[in-house]
Image (tube, rainbow, N blue to C red; front, side, top):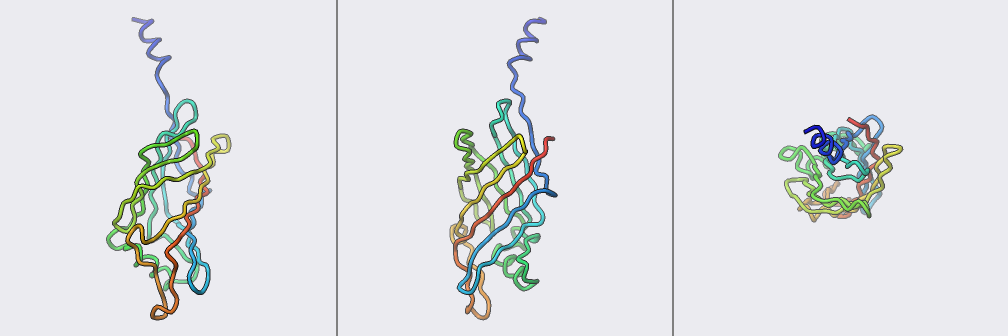
Length: 173
């Protein structure tokens, strides 16, 4: 019985879970309009990443609070962001991986925002030595049935394309 327990112990895979260290992480959304470029920083987010015993990621989950996004140009700009993302009905943007190709560091999963869920693939760079995950993802608002915000009775219009940049610090749980 002792040998069986020892063999079971030696063949068990130990996964490590990392949590986002939000005080040392940034998520920024960038876009452009017919007038100027803009960016909004996400202030409230959380997430985890599971890694197998070989250091390969196996699962990623991320949640961002829409009402924490700040465009840096005051309450009017923020209100347009919140309205476009339908924050009253859908206060969070979430990503949950369904598969990860550790060789190419591509996570495929479900991204949900403004009431729409789409499968997306995100390529990133993971350095477990420094506990850092960095990636950039280009998206189109129209893919999520989001009408790009506008101002001044439509004279200023945001373009459909946005870029989401992640600079994530991880800490072992």
